[in-house]
Image (tube, rainbow, N blue to C red; front, top):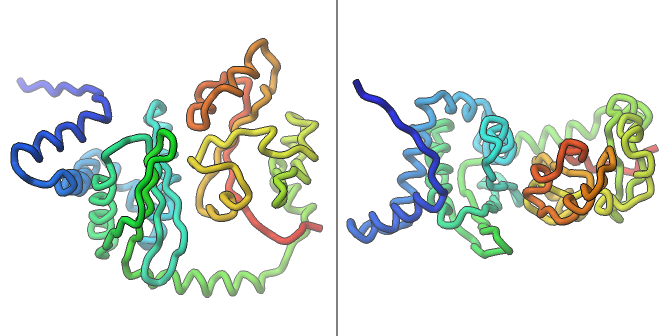
Length: 284
C-alpha cells in the first residue's frame, strides 16, 4: 500500500533546487523556473483550483487585474502565506504594465511562466512578457514587466466608460446611507466624511489625516493619494493604529508592526478593513 507524505518547505528550497539542477544539466536557471511555473498551472488543476482561475474574468485583462484579489482569497485557506502584490498600469489595446512585489527572491521567471501558461490554457492567447526593471526595495523584490498580448477587450471597456458618463447621478446622502462604513478623504489625505456605521467605532476620525489613523497592510505600496488613485482594481487593507478597545501596551505593538504583518500581529481589538477606491468629483 502506497502512502503519500506531504510537508511544508521553505520558499528558498525551490530556487536552490533550480540552481543545483542548472549546474548539473546546463539548463539556464531562468528556463527551469519558467518551465516549473508552466507546470504549476496543470498541477493546481488536479486539485480543483483551475475552476477558481477560470472565473476571474472573460478576458486576459480581467485575470491580470484580479491577480491581487486572487491571492487575497487564497489567504483564507492558507492564513500564514505572505502573498505577493500585483497591480496594473498603462493598459492599452496591446497589453498592460504589471508591477510585481514579493518578499520571495528568485521567483520572477516562475511567475512569468505562470502568466504565459495562463494565457494559453484559459484564454487561448499568447502573452509576451518583457521585464522592464527589477530592483530591491527594502525586503521586497519589485519587478515591472510589460505583458504584450491582444487586449482588444480594452476598447470595449473604454466605450463602456464613456457610456457610464451619461448615467444619472445620485446624491452623496444616498451613497452614505447605502454604505454606512464609508470614508471620504481628499488629495490632502484629510478625512472629510465618516459613515454612520464607522463613526460609532471612531467618533473622532473626521478631520484627521487618514494616515494618522490607519496603516496600509495591502497592497505593498506607500499610503499616498497618488498610489491609491493609480490602483483602482486593487483591494486595499487598512488597519487602525488605535485599538477599538484600549488595552495596555497594545498601541505600541501596532505602532511597531511592519506593513505586511500589522494586520496579523495586532490582536482582535484592532480594526482591519478592506476597501476599493472610488475617485469622484466633490460630493454635494
